Image (cartoon, rainbow, N blue to C red):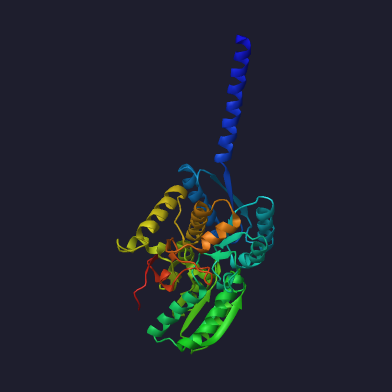
Amino acid sequence: MKSGIRRWALGCAAGCLVLASALSTATAGTVKVGAIFAVTGPASFLGGPEARSAEMVVEKINKAGGINGDTVELIVKDSAGSSEKAVSFAKQLIEEEKVVAIIGPSTSGESLAVKKVAEDGQTTLISCAAAEVIVDPVARYVFKTPQKDSFAAQMIFEEMQRLKINTIAIAAGNDGFGKAGKEQLEKMAPSFGIKVAASETYDSKATDLSALVAKLKADAFIQAVVNWSVVPAQAIIAKNMRQVGWQAPLFQSHGFGNIKYAQAAGAAAEGIIFPCGRLLVADALEAAHPQKALLTQYKNDYEAKYKEDASAFGGYAFDAMNMVAAAIKQAGNDRAKVRDAVEGLQKFAGVGGVFSFTPQDHNGLAIDSFAMMTVKDGKFILYQGR
């Protein structure tokens, strides 16, 4: 009899252990988030900081116990800047990995290619690319963190008005970002009383733009140049202009937001004017500025961990990952509910600005998310006018 009781007790104990293990597995799960970044290749200056920033956010979340007790698994796919790879990876993340959301891609061309995949797969995509057409027209599942092209163009034109510049040239790369920016500049210039005397597109991978510069310089009526591109052209056009002694003001897009670009241009970068988020000048902000604490914290954490300067691009992914985390915390591991939670984010403080999404606005930023900046003595500073 005692032997039978002992066997029953041991069996009960074993069963309890199995039950406890099952309960532990059920309550401590994993939530998957996908990421598509150009970690390698010509756009790695975008994707590298983005991947590192997203990983930094996830590491911090998991060290603090995850989200609602679940561990976050960030699945990073390296597109190398290829739209074809980005589309393939997006399908894989949605169909095979069953991710709850995707952050990225890094470039506008990739993001536009992936947009339909996210819509068809009913999976939230928070792009880290800048072209306004990514979210205009609005697609139900697609959002983006970089500021609008149109806001950048507006701030450039407003500064031109102050400088009494009324005739300009536009130069743009032939990638998705360049084409979208060129279109915005051409469309908006007349409303600011500005004539576009020349509007040129060049190979975004060009290593010499001297012929283009010579063509623009030959028109004596051109008072300033707006360049809308990514590296290496940002530095090259500045160098080529100064090499021929052309001192016309050079304006760049918000894609200039990495001090490495100014360093690549060297002395030719001095005086370049461009709009960008305030991360680049976080140290110069007043203590009471609503973004000061967050910008300083992100900048310090990133630079201490990765031993490189923080850039606006990493900030785009930092914001995107934090948005997804906030949505998961509210909605759980459910794609439809996460989408709704992202769209419902209001006054969400990020590196790029304070976001308030609506069904009509999947960028969520106002024009004050930008500040005008310039290069002085090889550093970015707030622009105070000429």
